[in-house]
Image 1 (cartoon, rainbow, N blue to C red):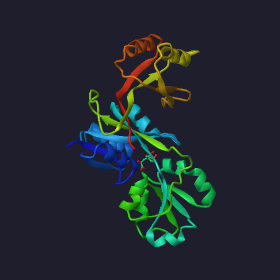
Image 2: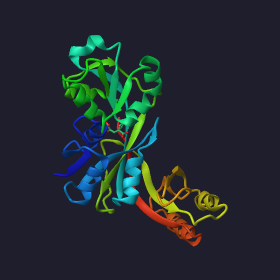
Image 3: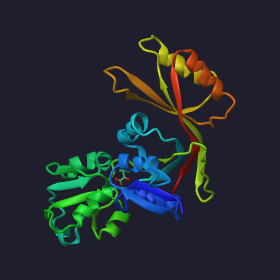
Image 4: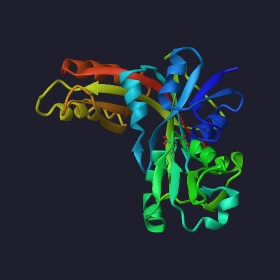
Length: 286
Ligand SMILES: O=C(O)C(=O)C[C@]1(C(=O)O)C=C[C@@H](O)C=C1
């Protein structure tokens, strides 16, 4: 049975994505994203599913940075799920819900609900946890303050016996998070007929030659004149000094597309370094 590592504990959004896409797998929870990724390298699991980007809050930097600097695993799939954030309390404390002093959650979940929290609980303290489900687990512990709540999903409410004080507290509709699937073998190509395949993608990392005017413009032209559709371009620090960045570029085509290998060659001829991080199917899970 395929062993899948995910950001735990039980009932995180990552767990939701894994359960939907790999219903038959053996799931193993890890408490941090790097631990989850290391487990693939060390052979403790076959694949890891980790969050990459949220529609409201943007990239999960720890995933991207760990992938680039520490744990170079190929991306073999992408899963997108809808995200609904709820405010949950311990059932014994449902009556104190109006005056919360402390709210626990993953930093990305707190960020997705900023406007709501600012309006309704301007005096509350926000404490970050390693995941939304970790916050739910904390709240299920009676010893916490009576005026504590967490932000997590409905699965966590069930799993940890919590009550929903307010549902759908995320600030914008159409909230989605994208997760990547990492495997040691870049040749693995995941297929799942049960879900909507929203296309094939290639992700690459491109570093520009230092201090050259128009370098980014040249990179974009390489894709533009070939009509290769980019769905994402993002810069991240190289961590070698201020002003040094690399770019992560998603192309809505397979790496075998006849125009991608020559595009890579042209980028290299322009002095860029290029690394393909993955070629994979992207799925929308409803
Ligand atoms: O804490 C969780 O439940 C996670 O799966 C992590 C995570 C994230 O890192 O973005 C995933 C989806 C939501 O956007 C909020 C948190």
